[in-house]
Image (cartoon, rainbow, N blue to C red):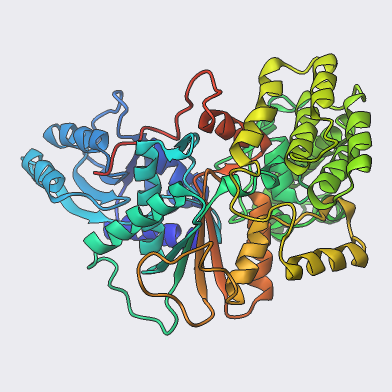
Length: 568
């Protein structure tokens, strides 16, 4: 169950099917992101694809010596663009691949437009999602809900994204959903409807234990996306923002021109792949080792290139050296900027209090620590407001809650009204009234005992005490203890055996902390394979934007990635 590999294989197959010769890859806004996350431009160039174009670009030249590979989402707009293209073809032959199911009527419309008979084939290749890590996918959508209900176009897009993941991984699953969320039930029914309608596509070889799709709602755990992170990938996203594997470093003081935007991809960056889930302390050591390794391999300035063999050795090593030099400068810059932000924003102190709020139940200590940090001028507006949000969620119904006084403190600190309003929005979005889970105070004896022992054991690392709610949910699911009363099956049948292939989808977005949880569960639970997906992968800023859109407190409604047509 590797989503990165699934998308890579689809793209390789498209290029192979078109045969030898020079090619152009025609994409739309979304498929451009889907491809760029799994393949670098240089890798695709090696496959004789010399040009990358957008189907909606008006300024494309006619190049009859090129074959066109079209990889497009099956939206009405894209079909219209293709019809225009086929009426006046710019390339010699067209291989058309849709990233999801396309209707017969639209195929007919394309066939009618192909008067010059330039279309060699039309196929469905189900890469309709962003493969973030091998076990994580995203749909890059922002603002999927209005209140507690779906934004209609978003329900359609999430259904398409999820069914495409199932088809790419060749799974026809049983479905469970979070009962406390009407949105989870709607999405479960919508996915089931497509599986029933397209039953021939989902006719995969039966496995002994059927795969399972579990649909959850972000509002059940609003704490996880509010926490500062300390593992590499999660930290980069939280502090710098990862967008389709790209980081914008243009605001970094004294940044050189070639490092203003860098790509971090585990597929072709060994250092990143090995350090994705390492904590910040370990990354510092590893970057030092990388530097030392680089120094040893670096061609000496005085290196004598006397013989032909010396020159040949230098030339042979140079591409590797150049690649290594790029890797070193990139990671040194990224880690350097993370260190600067950690110290400038005093994130170690902030994070310690966040973790205490998320994991411990000590009100008098919590209120003192939050107040102390709010009075610290070096604590940023965002960090101040997230501390108050965590306090508000943790001590929402505490008899001695000091929330009004903390709100005044934010005001005195000069925190903008927009940020202050968000505190109430977060409670409205993921407070006690909404949650179906025991996010904060466990009620059954087993959970209480578990928490008690967790407290006794002491904590290995104060900055990473927190476990997302997803960890407990999946742990219960794997052990066969996840309550049907809270996570019912859709339909009559249920799973008797321990599940083996599990796909989890989080409406309103997942986080890299949850991706780490799934990575560890996959590593430590033999025989179980889990893939995590979300309508987005959030950091605190994007999560708060999602909350404002859901609670109707945002000035203007943000759109997801590209335009979302209704299905077909």
